[in-house]
Image (tube, rainbow, N blue to C red):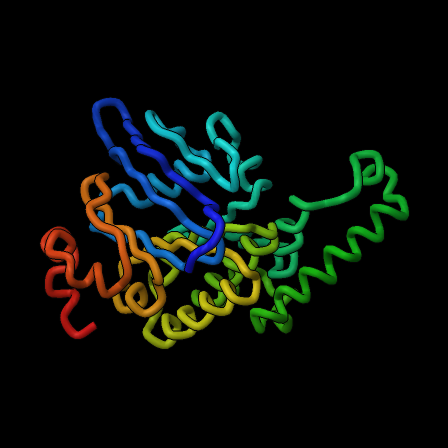
Length: 260
């Protein structure tokens, strides 16, 4: 995919004391990109996500999103700019209903003010009605509208993953970051996830970047792949280019690449 640059990392380095988790990383994500970041455990992948979303500030370098320098911007404000993410360990509001998980995310885009929320006036009631309707429409897209009143914790594992993605999309992002979305999934669920990620990108017209260890999923879905090793970006390119890169094979893929 080619288009306007949405996310840009310029020579980003992240250090924790004497440990360098990410070193001098440069990458770009364009609008509607479907990209993956791969590498062995401890390569710095999640640290990179945490830096993009404002959890860790870069020690050196610059992160720019949609023209905004993200330096000193809080995670909540970065989310309002249009970056949403899921986590390797599912972080739903498990004792809330499926619908309320979506509604809570929708409240990041509320149009009424503080006074309206206190008075529960016409503006408040109309907006809350719109939020509920939009939340149900989103659940319908994910074939989960019939589970709207279930507690999130009672969903099967694969559907908890789907709900987490739906909740992220409820914030109306321009960029969706998925941290190991296939973790813990069986082959059938992984196949459904592959189709779902394609659907999300095309239906919502957004860019998606995923961290993933399932190489079959990555090679099938990613149009652009970045490879980290010990915090360094050692390769980037298409699936075919990455499969044939000797540095990547030596550092990470090895025999995993056979049969893909």
